[in-house]
Length: 217
Image 1 (cartoon, rainbow, N blue to C red):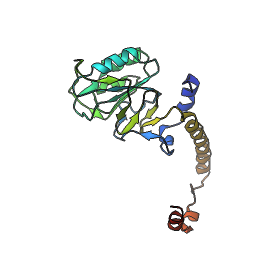
Image 2: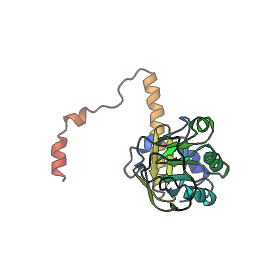
Image 3: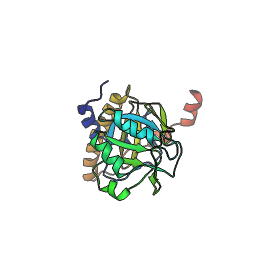
Image 4: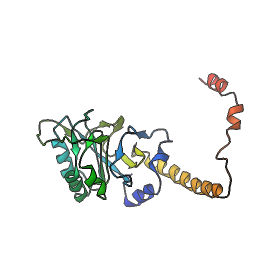
């Protein structure tokens, strides 16, 4: 299904954490967080794989990725070299990229925090990359912070972290999340009226769950 602004706006009215309930939705390691906690990003992935200090493939990806893409960087386990800083972030923003997420480090943290642009990373480093063009790949299946990511997968992130959804199923997930958001509105009203019980688990506690599992193996 085609990714549209209408779908984007619908997603942004829900929260990434809601999708963490659903089987089939992958998630990045919880240490992946935005430089600015107010950041929220969603869009199709354009993937990059970097090795060590060489960030050439990232620059090529920025040149050719479709507008609205989220640049997803697998930094191959590196936790030293920052491939994303203020200038890369500003360049990506001006090129129409919807955000950047890297399994590695970022830098220029104060300036990026002040920008109205989502950059997600595993941490901050003063040591940066160089454009050497001796390694790296782009637009290939990767693993970013423990999550498999294919080009075109839907990436959704906010202050709580980042989830990854297969484009074949994302509309189904969206509809479930919209229903959950509607239920939460009603829950808030009930809590405001003094109701204190979120959900009763009495039935589950009284059931012989172990026997049920054993009988259905």
